[in-house]
Length: 192
Image (cartoon, rainbow, N blue to C red; front, side, top):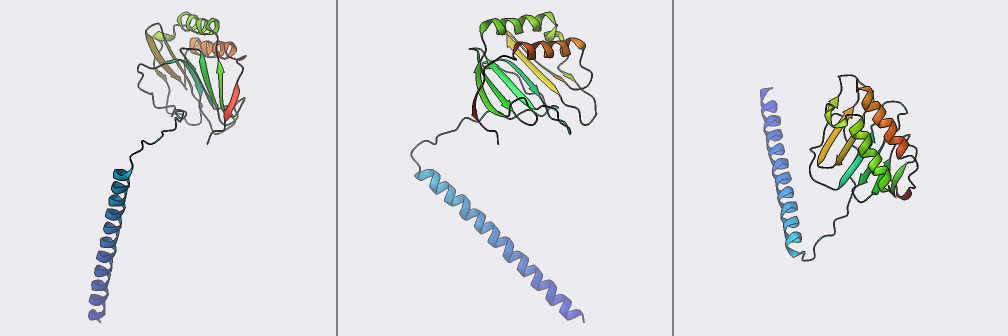
């Protein structure tokens, strides 16, 4: 009775080794084909600019020099929380990405005039935005975040408010949304 067990074990060992070898050969052929295609291609590839996705509320992006002046993002919850990101650049151009339950869904462009941009800077100063903690959060599920970033006058600050942000942060969020409520948006596409 032991002989068939040995034969079956030997067969399985040989079969698995054969499959592994075929898999490695297929991967090597794929890599070689990709290298050959890469070497044959002489025209540079066109890279489509894709806006950054909405952030994970528990991750803070490393802030660095760029042309973003202000951004406001609302993240999802398990319910009907509006999910969107609005970004204003130093030249006043703006992008709005509306997802679930947002006032508008899809990708939009617009323009924010200098007076509103100055009002946003003044509100940030008046509310003590630059002195706030970077993150207000606790291990609680199903709460949306508000993420605000202001990059102006040599200062660059991002605050994530999910659990327990100060009233000044809530007031700044409300005032920013009021200031930005009348932007004329032009739809440029849908989000994936």
